[in-house]
Image 1: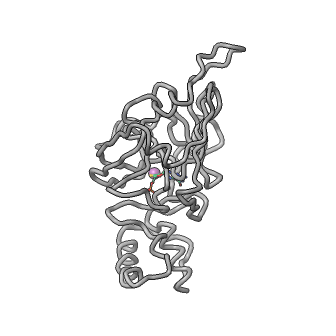
Image 2 (image 1 turned 180 degrees about the vertical axis):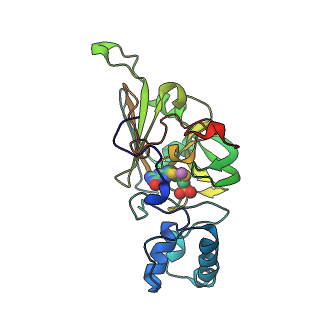
Length: 254
Ligand SMILES: Nc1nc2c(c(=O)[nH]1)N[C@H]1C(S)=C(S)[C@@H](COP(=O)(O)O)O[C@H]1N2
Ligand SMILES: [Mo]
C-alpha cells in the first residue's frame, strides 16, 4: 500500500452506498434536493418507495439512471454515468502484446462464451445473491492479442491493467489472476445486456474478488510489467481483493 490514501477508505465518501448516484441525479432533477449525505438503508429504502411511482411512469429515460433493483447499488466515482452505444463501442487490448486489438461487442460475442453465476459482493458489505454473468474469459482475450513472452530489456508481461471510458477508474490484476477461468470480460448480466448503470456495454467481472475489481465501462486492457494500483487501491484498498480474506475481513464473519 502507498501513503497517498487513508488506511480505511470508504466508497461512501465518494458515492454513498445509501445514496446511489442515480437517485441523487433524479432527486436533483425533481427539485427535491439532497443534502450532502444520505446515510442508512432505511432512508435509502424510503427514497426508493418515494421514487417508485415516478420511475414507473417515466418515459424520459431517467429510469436508465436508476439502480436496476435486486440489491445492487450503482457506483460511479465520477459522479455521472458514462454511456457508449453498442455499435461504436470498442475495447482496446494493448501493451506487451504481439497483436494489439480493438474489439467490438460483436467481436466479443463471436468468441467462445463463458458463463458464471455467483454472489456479487462489495467490500462495504452489500451482497447480491446468485448473479448470472456471460462474457468471454479474459484469458481468451489475452491469448487473442498474444501476450509477449517478454524478457527483452527486462520487461516481462506479469500484470494486466484495466481502464474505463469514465476517464477515471482503473484496476489491475496479476497475470496469474487474470488468467483464472472465473475472470471475464462480461457483456451480459442478469439475463440481458449490461445496462449503462451497471457499466455496459462491457465490464470486467472478477468473480473471486470484491466488486471494486470489476471495472465498469471497460475500455482498455493493457498488459504491463507490474501491477499498478487501481482507483480504490490508491485510496487504501487491498490490491489482492479476495472475497473473505482481504481488506482486513479475514477476522470478521463473512
Ligand atoms: N468504472 C467504475 N467501475 C466500478 C466502480 C466505479 O465507481 N467506476 N465501482 C466499483 C465498485 S466499488 C463496485 S462494488 C462495483 C459496483 O457495481 P454496480 O455499480 O454495477 O453495482 O463496481 C466497481 N466498478
Ligand atoms: Mo464496492
